[in-house]
Image: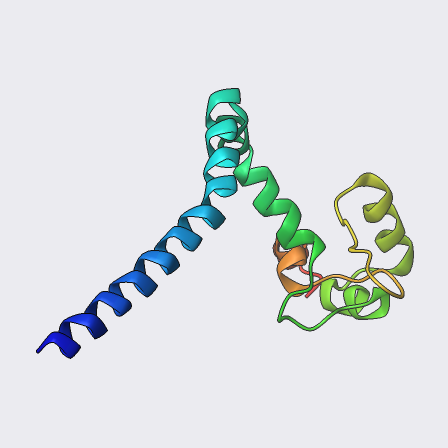
Length: 121
């Protein structure tokens, strides 16, 4: 019985040591969180989340396949000249990653609907 109690005491000591270690490691995170709250940065960040989300979705690769200029011209039923005009006007905004500019199909939804409306496709 006494051996059992001593083993339990050792386990409690280990547990207490682990908890103290966790508390020590979480302290800097808690300080940063408190600073973000006190300074108002967290509220500003929350207000800008939609723009940040849009930026991240436009910047990083998607699971969709990439469409390059020739693919976009075919997909939208437009000429090469129209393609360049739409890019210059900001109606088509190519993504830039490694290699040539490209689009995802979801980037072209509005222009695809316009092409359908005009009877190009």
